[in-house]
Image 1 (cartoon, rainbow, N blue to C red):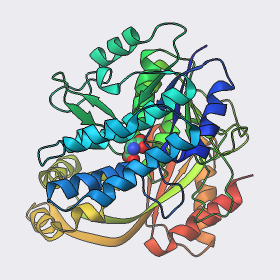
Image 2 (cartoon, protein in one colour):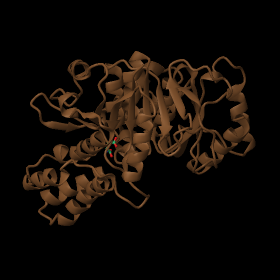
Image 3 (cartoon, rainbow, N blue to C red):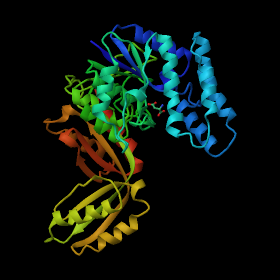
Image 4 (cartoon, helix red, strand yellow):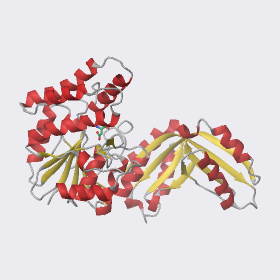
Length: 435
Ligand code: ASP
């Protein structure tokens, strides 16, 4: 059964990585549809091709000499071409492209060339047919993806037995003009293709062996998550764990196609499976993540006042300032509005002034020192005492819990602590709850 196999930038960074990709693709017959990002970093001080292309565009726009940036980009391609002995005449194509440089060259077109040329080189190397994403991924003029047309085009372009490669990260408007997806969007291209072809599995090859149960900057050597549901992943990603682009799961989730996160540099590692129904019950919690710098506005109302109506008025104030509300824990005469500090910084005093104008509000208390920790786990549902255990662990560590909320479908327990204590809170939960 067919799979879609997507490789991220670090899996394509140089000729050595290209070889690993070829070994992986050719090692299984069903890897017939490949999606690629643009060449990524070869080491941590290196540049991603996509970043260099954005830089090149800025040079052209502001009439800054661009020869050195252009050469850096060209050399990345030529190194791979020459080391692998490929024939594709990328030199002429790049010269043609260079002749078109002028201030009106659209940034999306120029930046998309990262995926386009990486895909062309890989197509020759694998012996696969290159299909330009501009002929598949179609956008409405309002910038959203036209799912129906896109799906139809992908289905039309693929014939059983074909071996094809599609560059990620871009598509086009109906008039053919190129449009980029969000940064990291090749993941989304892969997911869209997987859905359209209704494949058995979406393989997402990257440079980590799956998703970890906690941030390795906080926990040394955290365990790998074997299996995670789409919804759990969403809870974890929302709180800062990022392996995949956030929107990647939506297309495949609709069709119930699992995603396997795999490591190009450790190809035999089974990685993490993201799917609808997980069977692994070896851990109570699936993962823990945390995010700093939230603010909590606690609204205290008159005893007799109608909470629903005050909540409505309060939320309208946040909405009118375009501030996204993260959580609203509430008690009988008060409720808190939790927002990201970044979003609210500029207009916080206006918001407070407007809140204080609501007659039934007695007081507004603001806590600017809030980090949120999310303990995520499908196996916690219906298990008595888990949240009690978590809060006791955190409390015994001398960390005070400032707020408690629950994620969707009881999949996550979310609590707030001071920014400075976030790492300790994550550590104590991980050390005592992960077996
Ligand atoms: N190359 C693009 C980026 O760096 C897209 C991707 O890698 O998914 O954001």
